[in-house]
Length: 277
Image (cartoon, rainbow, N blue to C red; front, side):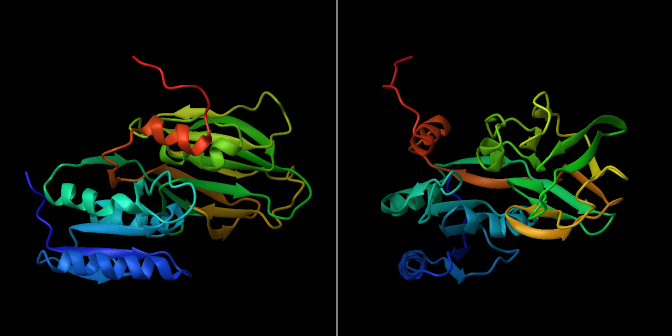
């Protein structure tokens, strides 16, 4: 069944002329098919959101798209492109398939996070507690629901979605999790104790963490909370950070040409010849 698309938003990567040029060409292409286009804005009545850039450009609008349940498709004009899967030279073929209803839409779990009972913020990839420029380790006590997990002595702590498992989580030694599995990952950054390992948890739990009172050598100085790569808050001794699965997922349109593990092999430079099943 063809997808009823009447209005499309196009989000452009900043600081480059190429996304603007491609965006204008794409707007004309949609216009020839009677579809309205709005640049660099997310509106509730949109039927599709097109990202022209890299994963960072998509992350910047993921919370707005998920809140309005607008399907998102990413054309990769950036670097790795785990989320912006569509190659620029296949864009018109892919959009023809989308208009004809021949596409796969995955529901990607998102996180919601708040500090000290403040307003919620949303993340598609991860929430990171980072010690910033502090020389000493930070000590972070963590709970899942009402159960105490442990107190991490580390450079920080990552709360990740399966989508974000290939981001900072991977660099910190966490596992790769297939995005269709709804779960939350807790991964310490450079832990002092080698037995501190990543934890995989079901999505229905509530995670809490706070700087350990009286034993935090950093003293709450320069400890930051980063949400999908953007600074959100400074965290001080006694502050509690809450992390839960968000109520609404991101609807992500995936490449019709590439599977998840084909993308991983290409992006992570996994070796070995292709094997037949």
